[in-house]
Image (tube, rainbow, N blue to C red; front, side, top):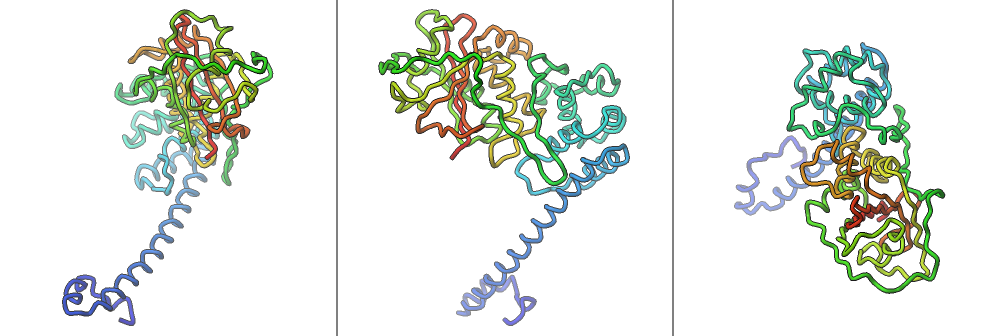
Length: 368
C-alpha cells in the first residue's frame, strides 16, 4: 500500500481473516496520519472563525452588527472554545457598541429565534452597565418577553445598587486582561491577637447538597481550581463581633492545620463588595478560563449570595437581596495547605444570618 488512495476501508476485516495483518496495520497508521492533519485543519479553521466573530463584534456600527447577526444565525460557527459563544459576543457588544444601535439591530422585533440567547445575555450586560431598559422601547419589550424557564428570567431587569461596582475585563481584538478583586482590604479589619485558642468548636456542618451547590455557584461557574462550602447552625444567637474568634475554630477542610499563630486575617465587608467579588469570580473565571461573562456572572453571583445568606429555596431576586442586606458579611484569608496565598487566587467569605443563628462559609482557591 504505497498510496493512501489505495486503501480499501471496508476490507480490514476480510484482509485480517486472510492473514494480511500488515494491511490492517498500515491502514491504521495512515488513518492516524490523516486524522492528525484533519484535526490541525479544524483547529486552524476554529481559530480563524473566532477571529472573524471578534472583528465583527469589536467593530462599532450598525453594518457590523447586521453582518454579525446574519453570520451567527446562518452559519452558527463553532470556534473551538469550551464556553458558549453567544454570552461572549453579548459582552463584547455591550462594551463596544452604542446602545441605540444595539436596540435597533439586535433587539428588532423580527429577530431570529436562534439569537434569543444573545438578546437575553445582552440585556443583562447592558443592565449591569447602567442602561435603563425603559429608555429604549426595544429593550423594554425584550425585558418582558424572556420565557420564564430561561435561567436569566430570575434576574431583575434593573441594576441593583450593590451591582454598580461590577468589574469587567479590558479587551481588544488581540486578547483581554482582568483580575478578580479577592485581596483583603485594609479597612474593616477585625484580626485576632495571637496566639489564638487551639480549641475546636463542637459545631457541625449541616449544609445539604442543594445549599452547598448554591453557595459554590460562582466559583464553580468560573471553574476555579477548588472551592468548598459549610453551614453551621448556632446553639444561640451570636453577635457579629464574636464571629472572627469563632471562625478559626470551626471544622472546615480549608482550615485544616491552622495553628494558633498562623496567619488568619479577617475583615467586615459590605454586601456590594462581596457581590463584586463573587461576580468577578464567575464572570471572568479562573486563571485558565474566560468565565461565563456578565449576564450569567450576575446570575451565579446572586445564587452564591442566596446560599450564603440562607434564603429559602425558590426565593425571588428581591427576596434574596432583602435577606442579603440584613446579613453580616466577612472576608478572610489564611495560611493553610488548602489555600495558597497567591494574589487574586484565594479567598473566604463568611455570612452571619439576620437572626445571628447561622454561619455559612465559602472558600475558593484558583491555584492547583
